[in-house]
Image (tube, rainbow, N blue to C red):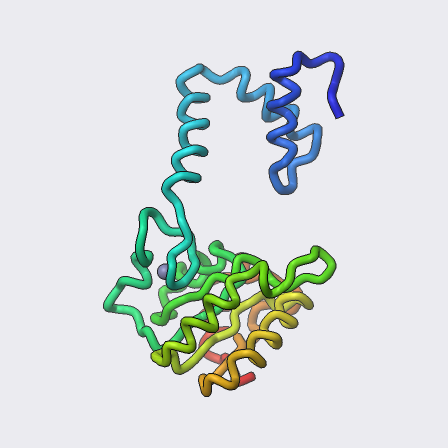
Length: 202
Ligand SMILES: [Zn+2]
């Protein structure tokens, strides 16, 4: 949807902003005008940050969380973490939420989404086979399902728990705590700590 009133380069910029999640046409235009008003140097820095992040940030080969450089991330490398417990979360931002609480001492596994037939997201689109390979190595004793307590989060947890049972690991689910239909990243630290503490076997 191009706008005759805009020169093509401006149209193209609006187009890119409009691709961002939660950004509508109007907001995209506001952002584009904002960028045009910035000093060259700041626009340069902004563009460079996009390219650098995309180039430098990879998925940790162990937990699949975003990590800079090659090899396992700092959390997976840390000798102070309990490698026998893995907490499965939907998104990288959920790791940040749980780490804020400083309660959890185990490792993580980031799925990068949840199973959602409505949005055409199946297990193959998520870091599921990486989780199975990890658990298959035998050091993990407990897998904590920490997907959100909404329909898709619950279904994903159930699905994974069924896949994991044959490995002989204990699969637990966070005790909520976290309001039903709520999101991990918005839970306060005390609620998250209680949810972890009260986790129950699936
Ligand atoms: Zn990692």
